[in-house]
Length: 332
Image (cartoon, rainbow, N blue to C red; front, side, top):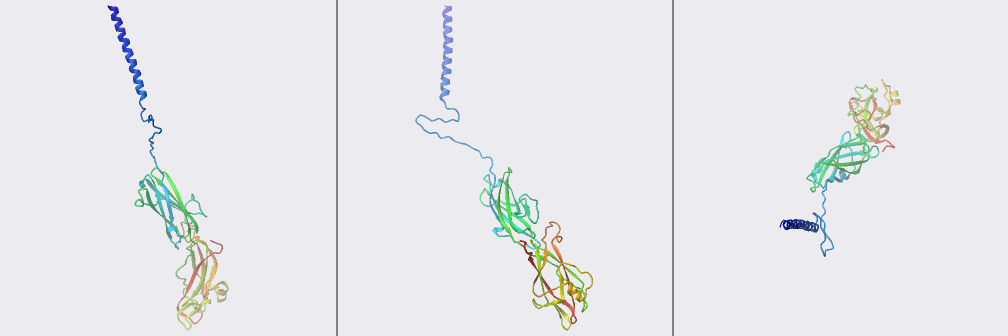
């Protein structure tokens, strides 16, 4: 009886082992027959499969799409002042307009400077930040207005405006445009040349008149005079006396040298040049300003003037001298 019981026990164990092996085989077959997670297989009778593809875009750099300088017009400078040159810019960023952090401009003369040169009022300007307008255009665009304060002595010729746009992750993009700066002929002089009190038949003390170049090219000057109306061949009209007018020949100038001390009439005539009723161009080659800090240092030349008072005039006398700026030959 014991042997029969042992045999039954062995059969039960073998049956259990067999059952486990069958279960494991079935389980393996089941899992092999299941699709692997996130994979797609063709089914019987299908000849193609559609697979979904995914991508997350990290960041997109901003694009400078538009650069317009001074509304597309050549730039005219302002004598002895600055001209605010507007540069109109459109920037696009497909991450959204809020991602556009900064728009800046570098403006320089392409003949006398380069993009990376130091700032100089004659040839190189930097506006590190422009005004942004997020209300412009689509949700991806901003308009920027950059104002460059261009000095009156900025070099004439072709200028380049290079715009740089940065986003919040410091990605950047550039675009540029060119525009011409016109030559500017302008000069400055004192309001009055005052000879003081001069007796009849004597020559006045020397009076000085500084000519300052308020433009952006080297200049010569033209001069002519009148007393009452242009072309009257008079230098001054006086309030008293029999003549009341002084001939234009009695007002004279020297464009280069100062002559100290009193002058006789003959010395006066030898050392100075007659003023005339018609404009005469005199070579002075007055430089335009290069010094960014101190005006009236490298841009000013001095002229020297005297007047002879003939017999027959008296009282208070007054006349006019017209100075003109003429571009020096070969400069441009």
